[in-house]
Amino acid sequence: MDNITNTTNSRKDFLKITALTGAATLLNACNFFDKKENQSPKSEARLNKPIVLSTWNFGLAANDAAWKILTNGGRALDAVEAGVMVPEGDPTERSVGYGGRPDRDGRITLDACIMDELSNIGSVACLEYIKHPIQVARAVMEKSPHVMIVGDGALQFALEQGFKKENLMVPDSEKEYKEWLVKSEYKPIANIENHDTIGMIALDAAGNLSGACTTSGMAFKMHGRVGDSPIIGAGLYVDNEIGAATATGHGEEVIRIAGCHLVVELMRQGRNPEEACKEAVMRVVKLMEIRKKDLKDIQVGFIALNKQGEYGSYCVQDGFTYAVYDENGNNLHTPNSHIVLKKEAKPKLDTLKK
Ligand code: GLY
Image 1 (cartoon, protein in one colour):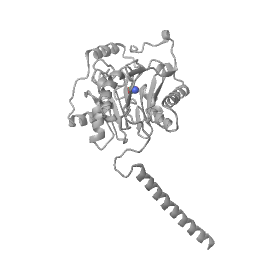
Image 2 (image 1 turned 30 degrees about the horizontal axis):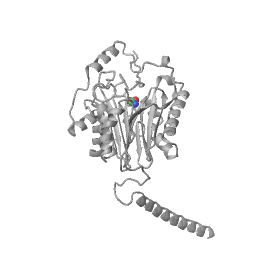
Image 3 (image 1 turned 90 degrees about the vertical axis):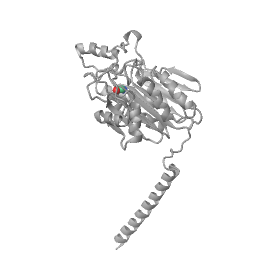
Image 4 (image 1 turned 45 degrees about the horizontal axis):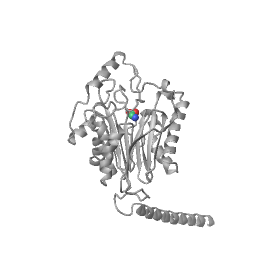
């Protein structure tokens, strides 16, 4: 009998606790979102001091476009989209959008993703014939019930949304491709100085974060190969309470550690942006060592920005740059790196290995 009473009481207590916990959770959830649908989580953001960061030297021109929006009180989401569209539309940039290098079948396939302060996300992978894949990624986010559309489906979706089908091959890319075909050696190279993914993260005057990432991927990759850039959590991650991060370099290594999600989580745990990027890079390094791979064959770089407007970066080997536009102007930075290559030992990064 006692046992039954005890069991009944324990069950009652359990139900009481569960009900109270449930109510508390519900209350917390209501406070967290302040009862208004689609309102950003509260946090102590830096206000009225926008900032934008992007990868590589071409980040300078991209930042200019983003800054115009940010400085007029625009939304970080609009700024990062407009920013990355600059290298996407530039036929002289060999690794992004129009003018990007083809895969080994001679097809230019593009990857992009975008994420806003409400954790809305959109992504396309292996998209052909569309000059601005970032706009298609945004359309996936805003006009489809999905978060990622790939290949023929992505093209079909883009055309349905009114995007124009264009030939993205420029004469210089075609020439490089024909030269590569002579040996057709399959050695995808990601560490191409100033010629890799553009990843951009921004904090707007309202204190909200967004990010965008876009690339044509590794030159002469296998058809259908997808890197980190269109994968939320790998090539890009934004948490409006904490910060944002984006990546460049060897996508396989970034995916392996869920890189940008890791960087943001490390910032959540108290690391500053550079410390978070460094810890993520060191995880790449460790996994390369465990797998007995040569670190010098790869490059990975992260850039990160926290909610207070502090930023930082770290990369596997030197040669990586990133651009920051804030109240001090638009400036190029060289992050610390795990490997500092001697000048003469530096691989000719902007030349594709034959
Ligand atoms: N980070 C670009 C790629 O690996 O495709």
